[in-house]
Length: 232
Image 1 (cartoon, rainbow, N blue to C red):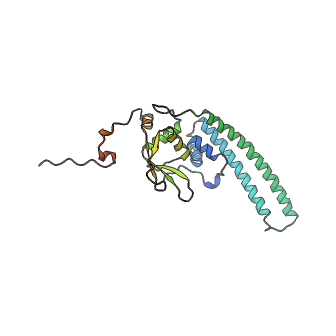
Image 2 (image 1 turned 60 degrees about the vertical axis):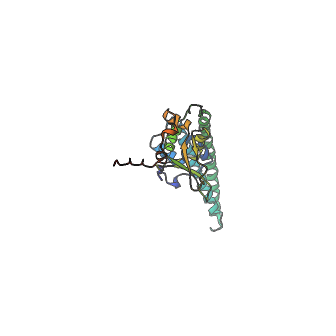
Image 3 (image 1 turned 90 degrees about the vertical axis):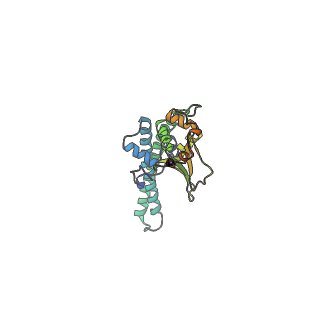
């Protein structure tokens, strides 16, 4: 499966806004950061990504000092005045890190809420008004995709035929807008095939689907057409 992430997992700390950031951008966090590093984001998404990144850095600072405090208070170190001094310094650093985290979270939340409020109504009877990343996701899904559910975690994921991942919240928006549909007759753990609806096809190409009568069974199944019979 193709991955866009060039950010090692240790470089990113989870935040309380991850799910909403993924939902509004349509990308998982690692891919979003990679797009930012490559200069592929428009101005609103760039601002959101930078705000989220600074928040993640602050969360990492909180986690570091919290982990250090737990180690100092674990009872494994000699109980002396030096230990008490280290605990006091770590508590002070933890308070400062938490204050920084809260400030950065307020800023990231303000940027995020502005994007959420500006998100257009996407579904129409003739097609849909999509943001650029939503149109790109619809194009990727048009090549074939499946919705999977991990048996252990229960997490849902969408993978296209070319190996590109589409964030599940983004897929849900496209499905709610009646642009895509999935074949629920297949079990989720095996993968439910996803296809474009007529509205989705019109949105993508500007033309409706050809009448079903014009498609042969072989072409609908994706098979090669039968060779013509030889004349005797």
